[in-house]
Amino acid sequence: MAEKMDTELAKPSLLIVDDDQPWLNRLARAMETRGYEVHCAESVKQGIQLGKQIKPAFAVVDMRLEDGNGLDVVQSLQAENPDARIIMLTGYGNIATAVEAVKRGAVDYLAKPADADEIHAALSADAENKASPPENPMSADRVRWEHIQRVFELCDRNVSETARRLNMHRRTLQRILAKRAPR
Image (cartoon, rainbow, N blue to C red; front, side, top):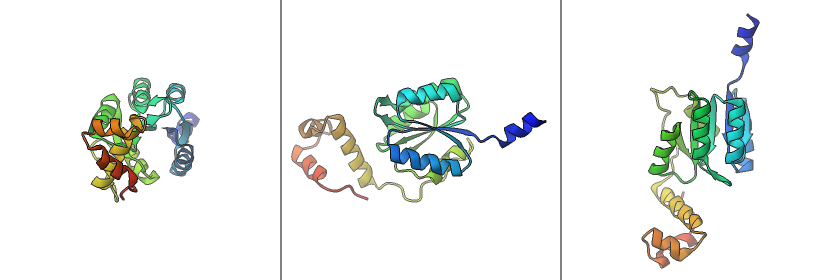
């Protein structure tokens, strides 16, 4: 009887993998207040190792990490615990990566900056009922700007190469890069 009582009081384990330390700390504190036992990792390597040790019931994984791709963490977590509910986070959302995240085992895909309430809703939503749409989703202009910034970073901030890959005139790209991010 005592064992049953201990498991009822046990908090569900949550692994958060993100290389943005201030955001990671804020999210960890927020999720602890929502009743999770939180474990944090800052890299693909740490995320995979910690996932194998604790086999979390829930996970929140950033797509781009310093040492690789968060999809590798998702795949490893899914292999260790097929029942884990994994949420993929990214500042560079696109359909191809969302599909790949789901194929590897993520149950949802949220764009950064997602707040703790959105993440908790996605983690606790049952399989049949999807989480409600966000109150303030990114505008189409913001999504476009984020995509351009991502390609620019992947091209090592080379304007000519970025313009070629985006099939855009170099001067047009320079004007876009000189402006502030749309809301």
